[in-house]
Image 1: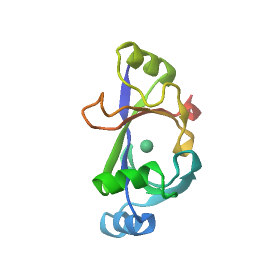
Image 2: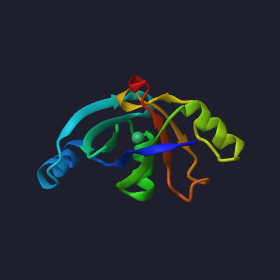
Image 3: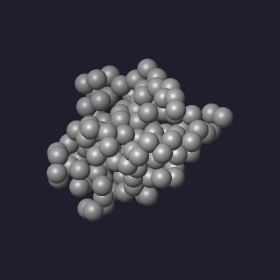
Length: 137
Ligand code: ZN
């Protein structure tokens, strides 16, 4: 498998609009998209940083995965997303290497990407997302 770049870094926040203000006013970045992903019970905000993005994630539900993450660990880095080619093949390859996957087949994430998560138990405590932008193909 080939990872082409870090697509984005996901950051769990309690208050999206406050966090957007920080990244815009203090860090000088521009939020170019706010999107709700009902499947993951999150509202996201994206910032471009070179070829990598920052994805802020706020839970939209009291039982959402981001709310659970924040109650256990507090706000902070939630996941790292690697851009890959042929995500289905990547997932097959990881499974054949006995890497534990949260998603064995890709699902739709923010920005229309095909995404899948690797179980952090397999990846030294880091939640890794692999993603592919099929709109680019
Ligand atoms: Zn992500």
